[in-house]
Length: 156
Image 1 (cartoon, one colour):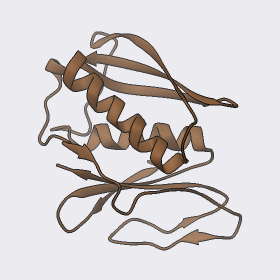
Image 2: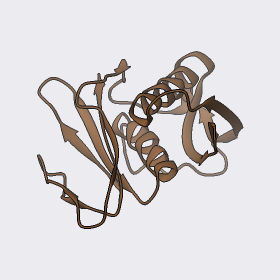
Image 3: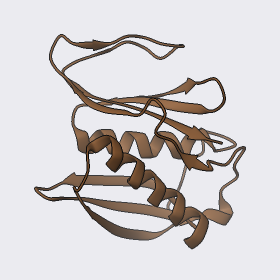
């Protein structure tokens, strides 16, 4: 696992670590989707998968603001189009980010809580250089570079 629940005063967040910004985006998406599941050990077999869609967005803002936009899109796909994202594959190109989402019918997903919004509170998406680290906090382990780190808080 490369993402961890991060309890905050009022809501819940995740902290994630990956070897590249594209993998970090995938980890944060996976983390957000899993914090709301009734059973986080849910296995999505081939029978639940409905399809894939490709989503593109220009890199027109910093990565921390871009991850908020991406997570808002994941929520929108679930709430408006009944597409529960079960996997993502992100590619960061010169001027845009391209994500292929694999999805299932949202109506078939049992949830304990609902993410109402992605906040900008304590938002981070940053590169960690070799021998740099992010301190352990609230049960989330220390993260040591090189790599990429994200911290996102959700309004439930």
